[in-house]
Image 1 (cartoon, rainbow, N blue to C red):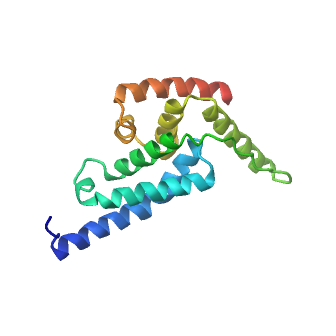
Image 2 (cartoon, rainbow, N blue to C red; image 1 turned 180 degrees about the vertical axis):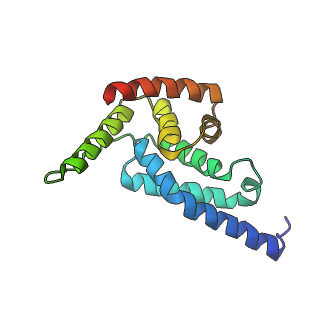
Amino acid sequence: MTEAPPAEAALTTADFVECYRAHYPRVIRALRLGGADAGAAEDIAQEAFARSLVHWRRVRRGRNPPGYVYRTAFRLYARRADLREEELPNEAGATADIQQETATRLSVESGLATMPPRRRLCATLCFIVGFTPGEAADALGIAEGTVRKQLEAARDTLRSAL
């Protein structure tokens, strides 16, 4: 295999670093909202970026390089089946606004927790991370129509949770 010219290698590295800086915290957040505990989310995100770096020259030429990272992360998460319950934070002494925000966040997290894994992942990517259904479908390796159906069901679940 031939080495990339130095200019292309630097561009490839710069693209990866930019993607890493922009999306690493978002991948962790998406995994956390998808049900992973904090330590597992960080481990999975690191592994997803490490695997993506190995193939970055090819990945960066694709339609959605960050989507590749998310897809890798969510597939790693699915393989781990790390679906342990987390303790909810204690918000004693918080102001009324913070308590209301916390109650809403916990309701959303509770609603997400009751969803089947695929629906929870679709909802997390679209509602929380901000992906379009097409981007979520690409990231999860499923059809866009499947994502749209899962999002409709997720909306119903979240409406009743809120």
